[in-house]
Image (cartoon, rainbow, N blue to C red; front, side, top):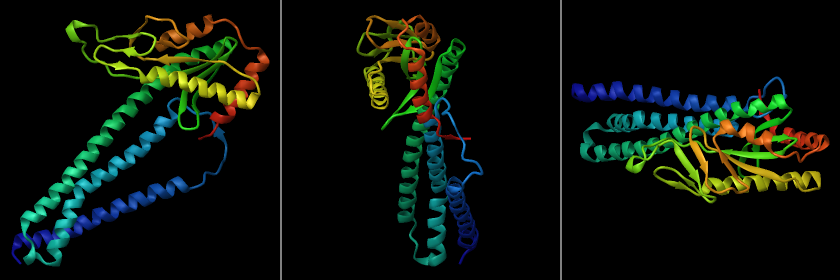
Length: 287
């Protein structure tokens, strides 16, 4: 065996095996840590963006796994084949196999990277909205974050004398508008959000649907109907509501004033009962 192949077999193979073992050990440790029991069982209320934070952690794990495969997969395959029978190796099929592995990993990493960026942006937006809503606590309002529904969640719920408000947050990046249009303005025409370069009809429908689902959940528990006002928060954008509907679309800075200015509709007993139900559902986060 020549010096080049010897260095590959006796250098690359042990190195790749070592990294493979370390990677598998890291996966095992992560899984074991998640199954460990804490010394206390107390739960606290969900923090802003709790669901997104959990998804970001899962995406990070997947991203790291694919990075490991990208770096050490081709190395391990090449070193293994050379160690078994170096004379029978033809390099062009091996190059094709390595290229396929590289292409697959690159595609998956690009996919996970886009999802991570979107989730991190959404997480930042929910935390920003929460800072404005927390101002309402001084006025006696109850504020809950990340209320779990059957297959989704309500980003924020506010309960107070003026009613129950389900607030959905949609954080969107800014791009230059066509024909010199401002890149910081978005209009709500009653059905969709009109951004400088695109339109979004899904977010308003989602906000209204989740408010209805929350109202139904409260109805089942309380035995009488509770109207929930849908609100769509668009952080960082100047929002114009061209049509007034039951859905309010606002920059989060304006939401506390809107909630305070609404007409009183709930008694103290109703506020307490609704808050207790929301507290029960949202108090499931481990310290």
